[in-house]
Length: 391
Image (tube, rainbow, N blue to C red; front, side, top):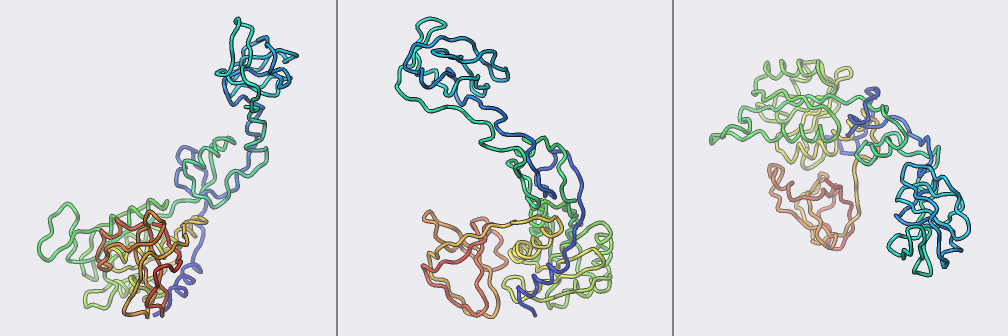
């Protein structure tokens, strides 16, 4: 059995790049950008009005002003603003030459259609200046960023209509176990519904991979081998839940070896997730994870995400924040690194969730994050600051 730190170094050492492709901007959501993107324009591209109002010279605002033109957004001003002159202007329109402020329409008295008077003594500029948000050549989005709706707006700003992104990893998902039935069926007294596969499908796709589900495989060596061979030929990564412990019907590690996989580790000193398997066959990799659903969730969170992020070149893929413990934590045994789901209260302190162990999948519904308890630590006092990995 190896430590988590040793195991994650093995995972990192086997990361490779899947390559890149250009995709349509509108289809790039959740993909990983593989080049820095720079702006080809200033933003705003010109001095523009931040308000509906009248563009004028600040030194004239105490005087009666003559309205010499109306400037709509998208139209160029035709006249220069001179002494005691102004132009009616719409939000987003170009500021005319000579003007250095915009008085807002609500603060103006109208004497005639072409004569106005500002009723206040002072005004902000109410101008968005050229390049104040973005200057030409400025980096907008960095290589390794996941493209969300926020990044899509920045890419559109610079006309990047076919961003260069990572090829999506294909993840084959296999559930093993004679006791497992699909969720649409009512289990008998010896069965349980398949939650792991659907959880892993969601985790994979939410992280930017393509999930390919291969169904439930019975605890038969030949059946497991047949499915592994098929999935191996169609995917970059295989996730197998169940069949990795020490029981008589835990056949997955040996079947993986017989189907051409070299197992790089088979046990990790973590709780949950001790019987985690990681192996490779050429450029196809596999994680075998425990059948308990919290275990598989956490193995994905701490191991699979690391590997997928590497395949896609994704940087900064999780958030960890330091928060104060709002309760005393104790455990009886401390020989493994523990992962414990927690919630964050209204005072930004860590509180426990009802958690009965790695089979208690619904506990994650109420969790905001996971804390890690190092090997050798059996208690953490209330008030201690610890890192929370948000989920």
